[in-house]
Image 1 (cartoon, one colour):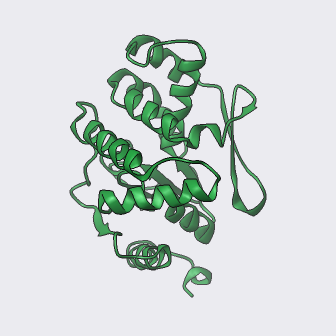
Image 2: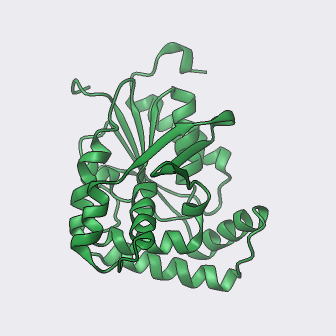
Amino acid sequence: MNGMAPVITVDGPGGVGKGTLCQWLATRLGWRLLDSGALYRLTALAAQRRNLSLHDEPQVAAIATGLDVEFSAGENGILHIRLEGEEVSAAIRSEPAGNAASQVAALPQVRAALLQRQRDFRQWPGLIADGRDMGTVVFPNAELKLFLTADPVERARRRHKQLSENKMNVSLAALEREIAERDARDVHRAAAPLMPAADANILDTTPMSIAQVCEWAWRQARQRLEIPTQHRD
């Protein structure tokens, strides 16, 4: 340990199971949780509500700097997110919100504005950081770095199932196109492109259940971190 609160980073594209895994790890360990993608989604939503172009880098970065956001845990571990006092948890989980977030995440000034805000989440007893550049840029000295991948078609299928369960009607073909476009932006952007850290443990989740992914991650955590005895079951 380096004297700071320990961090486990979980990076990868959308639809690989990062969010579910991170919530599971945070609950199992009793650690804090950072959903970095939510910060970019919130920035995009706040900019759109002010009728700003998502390509207006200085203005969007100013939005990110002064973002009025509140995270709070509700019943059953559900994370509530408020923007300027308004509950927006559902609004920022839509596909359009995800695409808008990918656009603003490609802006270097926005990434710089949100960098320290993300690092401020590193508090005891520890942090699970969910994102796309957590292990490469935000927490390069994290104690454990995980990177999840999955076939784009399988990721679209998972997302389609999730949206259908939430009564949202989106075509599978449209989701496949949006995922391909988002991947291209994330991988090829100049600022912090999506890629595994050199010391990351990589897992292809395509053929796996979420229970299997959690079991794999737990093995990595137990091997790397000094987990208290009560967690070793």
